[in-house]
Image (cartoon, rainbow, N blue to C red):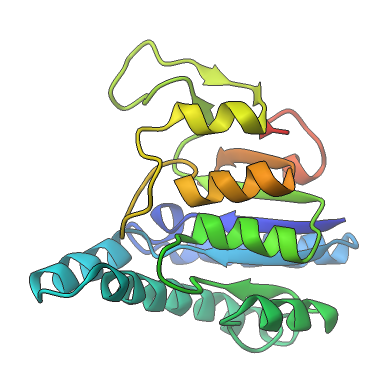
Length: 224
């Protein structure tokens, strides 16, 4: 199976968590050992948002704020690449073409952001579409998708399954902005609705949840 794993920066990098990063590296290697082809996409978390804030204070435009966050996410990806050593493709791809080429080398691919106007959620969805992935799993800072924001509403209910068409109506924002932080960003929703890539959102604080999703176990929220 060809799998895209979206690793939330809020999970591994807010604050930086070396043990969890190591656990994810082990997970990616285990997936490869089990015969899967793997691409991982890392976010930049609170550090990326700090850089966006500084860029804003420096009077920079939206695309430049995005670039600040992109470089932070690529730095996170580089940590994974270095830890993977020969199991990885040895570099952090900066385009879909390069990502596809790395995967063709039968290596584990890890990348961060690609270009302004999208978060790493969208990158993961675009990568999945390009490489014709079978599954996208997002390790998030929540354990699934809720019918409303669980941080604001005590009666929020987790959804076990929803359709791509239902996905877009659940979130507050439907446009991109630098540093946007919601379970699935609006541009990613559009890509998923287009390519219909089966997606599972799980709690990313335990890498075993991602493995469970790949193995088809009941975990998180399934979008299909």
